Length: 87
Length: 147
Image 1 (cartoon, chains in turn red, cyan):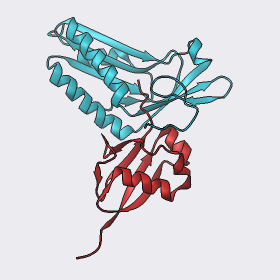
Image 2 (image 1 turned 120 degrees about the vertical axis):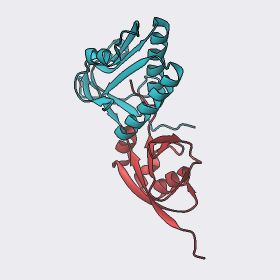
Image 3 (image 1 turned 180 degrees about the horizontal axis):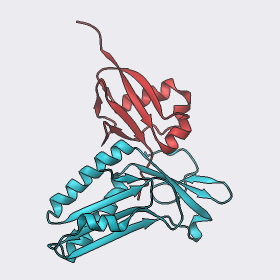
Image 4 (image 1 turned 90 degrees about the vertical axis):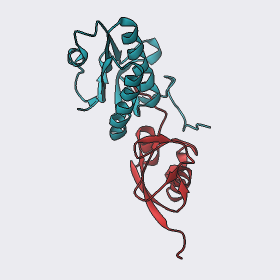
């Protein structure tokens, strides 16, 4: 048996969140099993500007809104969404 | 087909997509960039989106509408980029055999857009200031916390 598998998750930021962090995309490594909330925590730990993001943002995985306790897997795209303001 | 455009929205094109002799009621909704007293000199709104998710979510949203109003036909377009005050940012056309379903389906789509479609807007003013708009329509001055 090997230790916990670590995967790299692509994180995308939009609108105000992209401005706050100064980038629209990041990659974070998390050991599995991991949730979207773990990815957000890791992002905030690794990128100082990401601490300006809310601790519990609206999130999507692979183009679907999910709760922060949703599991992530290798190859997933996590998106952190500011409050939706379309129309 | 994309639900997004960066050009003027043609309501005529949407109406043509939903027209049919069996559908006797058509409801059209246009959302336009507002610049009233509350907006304090907004000249335009810059719309941005998580475009891939917008396409996927619109498909799911219209599938939900189809399940509720199977005889209706619905077309929708959301515009992105800088949209001057007075121009449409979103247009919806819903046609159904009878008007009640056309009105209901059209209303359903715009309300779901407000809730589900990942689009964001930044108000642009003549004095050069810019403000992100939060869902309640009020400007956001500080980092948001949702909890």
